[in-house]
Amino acid sequence: MENSAPAQPMVKAEQVCKSFGALQVLKGITLEIGRGEVLVLVGPSGSGKSTFLRCINHLEQVNAGRLYVDGELVGYRERGSKLLEMSPKDAAKQRREIGMVFQHFNLFPHRTALENIIEAPVHVKGMKRDAAVARGKDLLAQVGLGEKADAYPAQLSGGQQQRVAIARALAMSPKLMLFDEPTSALDPELVGEVLGVMKNLASEGMTMVVVTHEMGFAREVADKVVFMDGGVVVESGAPREVLTNPQHERTKAFLSKVM
Image 1 (cartoon, rainbow, N blue to C red):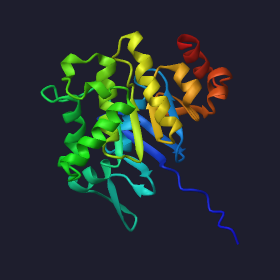
Image 2 (image 1 turned 180 degrees about the horizontal axis):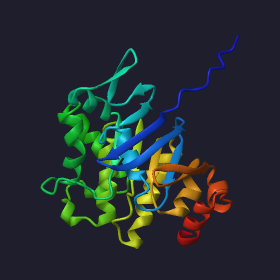
Image 3 (image 1 turned 60 degrees about the horizontal axis):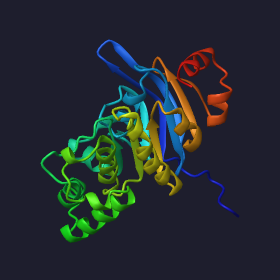
Image 4 (image 1 turned 30 degrees about the horizontal axis):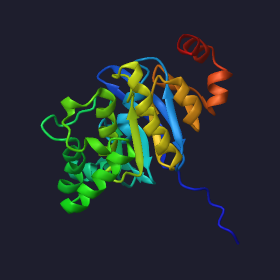
């Protein structure tokens, strides 16, 4: 008899809530992201998109609900019906499996592009330096910066720095990539080169969760678009449905301003 059990999703959120003091930022987010899927989160500023992204790799602790990555509970251990927070060391080990690219590139200014990329594989994963250098050079070539290995961040454009940041995240061989508005700090003419790298990653089957205002990217690359507002999922579905035929008034009002 064939095993017809559904494949385990890469990310599963169940009623995830997050507050900062009295401010409730996430109000019960439930969604799933399949392996190899690209999920794009869209919505107005302050709708909770970036907070949700940060909860996925436990940069923020959830106050209620559960988040799983690759079947593993994020940030907590279950003891009977209780959730106990993981030690910082165990949480950091979990986080190694998840690549994150931020709005600001956060590169070490005193290290070259290549040194930025090999830092974590060598010091966190214990990879041999020669192997890390070879992989780092491959990754720089992959993001179109093969000739920039010895350049310092200050010698690179914003778009180039962001591509180095993507290569740095990939150097840890993550199973999941999170992108938090990766192009919003860039000059408009540099946006395309970063989105191009992300499109290639998607075509290679990388599971990705992307917070972005780039609706063209969402339409072209996303498997699923989720519109968030006020800490809840208002609408989700295939890009064609959500972006060209939204069902909710709130989605329609938002898209009329950004499309």
